[in-house]
Image 1 (cartoon, rainbow, N blue to C red):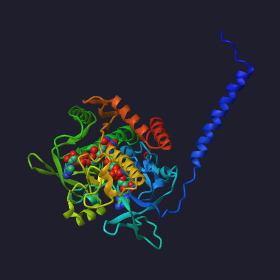
Image 2 (cartoon, rainbow, N blue to C red):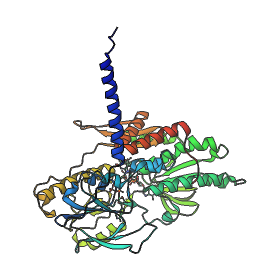
Image 3 (cartoon, helix red, strand yellow):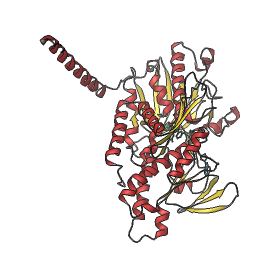
Image 4 (cartoon, rainbow, N blue to C red):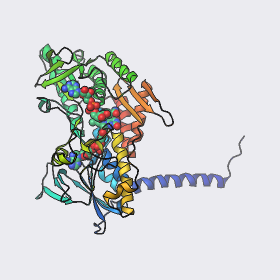
Length: 480
Ligand code: FAD
Ligand code: NAI
């Protein structure tokens, strides 16, 4: 039998437990009440203006040595959005606040203050080194527009949803890019369901209202279709059994297959899974026009057109440039800025033809796909360059002298496709081949990868709580 610890041994043990508890509570309180650093601009330092609070900009700000610059951040959203989990907000699997983080949470641990301005950049003028900003919120003060001067400018404004100018898309379709888009989809979905359940609704109209169409078979469209499937099977079947048999999801894709950036096995697995889940995949079909209650689609092989009635339409056909980028490009077309995907940058992320301006993420046209992984790595790279630039007293144009060019390391391509199935193409270090796996393990991998990638402990706790809540009580079906 193990000897009983002495009286002093027991006291020591309980003292250690108490000290541990005090340290945890103290740490939480210190974190919760950490003050925002305040600082007047230092006229001896250069002004660094950062546009955006997305993947690229946040990754830059987290690593930037703020003591080297007077840093100003301008963005119409005063938070960072963790886009990979956005499709889950459309069905209430996750609450919207669980995947956003106020920008000030990132900035308060910086030793020197960063000024945040909630506004939209509307015009960039490299000649006068100023950016015009507009208060685009709903509440306006006496001043809504001004110009901010900069020494160095980083553009990370992302992109907006592409419509290819197809008639009716903006009027009748819903997008999935911002947090407000996900909330709109959640409300519209419940509106279609409640309207279909209205007494005496004719069968044809019930079928139309419950026909949910997703256009675009890229990862946004596929992940949304998967989440929608889970909501319909998990909640609508249970709460609206009288109309549930009429529910239908259709995914329309102009190309022969979905998920072009995944390996062939993962594409086949997704298409087979969609067949199992009764998600209708209309491949080789391009939408030509959107009307209030029907779409006009064209078979890209035969050229035949037909009408498809729908209740809700989610449009996910990729990215296009934001107006501020289009405007800048138009003025620098003769200086190599004519790429329709975005700003042309060199391998150091410097914008072609515009001194002291860098750009990163979805607003640029590079050899890399417009993904969070790329934008985040570019942000880290640029922070290192800007820290280095300030410490060595060089100017923006000198950067070529010592810095290595940006080098992207692809880690993985993951997607959730519904029914607790995922698809993953993972690059391993020291292994030239990619490892692909699909199904339940891939879904668990997807969940754990994104849970651990969330930037704050608070967001991780909220997401884990929402997932547990969904398992125990199901999703909320209120239309609000
Ligand atoms: P964003 O993150 O879009 O940030 C742009 C920022 O600029 C925002 O803060 C915005 O408010 C601000 N802004 C906009 N206009 C202006 C203006 N005029 N002036 C100033 N600021 C402005 N990628 C992955 O790698 N993995 C995934 O799993 C994944 N899932 C995704 C799921 C969805 C639903 C979507 C839509 C995208 C997903 N992506 C994913 C792609 C990824 O989100 C983008 O590639 C990434 O957000 C690009 O980062 P960014 O910093 O360029 O732009
Ligand atoms: P996308 O550009 O990847 O796919 C859009 C799809 O829409 C294309 O396959 C295209 O053929 C199709 N399309 C275009 N016009 C059409 C029409 N008129 N009718 C029917 N189909 C049409 O766009 P998506 O999914 O919005 O993604 C944008 C970016 O974000 C991509 O770079 C993607 O890699 C990234 N992303 C990554 C995710 C992940 O890694 N899990 C999740 C979501 C987005």
